[in-house]
Image 1: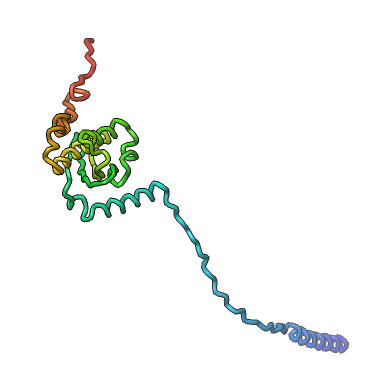
Image 2: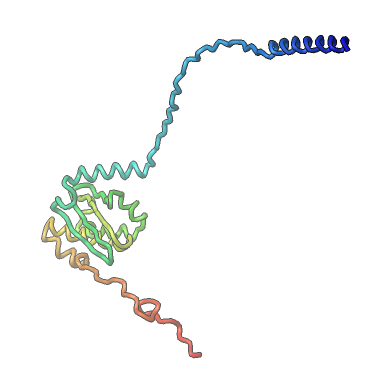
Length: 206
């Protein structure tokens, strides 16, 4: 019995010793690392350069706009040799100035504006050719409404009326050619029950 007690006491002492060792071993040591400050580098925004190249047509339109404004100080209404022509739904305000025979319609060359159509180009030149002034005046036009055909005929009437302000002697030759007559023909309205103004639907007997 005595032996057993002594053996138990020895075992208890060994257990307490081992627990002290284990407590010491549980202590963790962390190595201190020195942190070096990193200098802040500001971000440079990227520079984006965008260039828009104007087309030749836009440049030509801009040049013609400046040219017309330089030739017509105060605008169309401030000019003296001016005439207004109408045809169908088109209205054209025409200004004549001494020049070399240029035609500018809505700040564009007449040939470009009228799409090079020879008939429409002939319409706008007839009053000047009738009096022999095709190379004596520059024509500036503001036109709106209708189509190009109606605008061309409205311009012709406007030029003829403007030429009357140059001289009253121009009335006889212009009137003889029928250039001072306002063409009042317009499209007839559609009727109820018909397909167009006069066209009726196909008749079916059965």
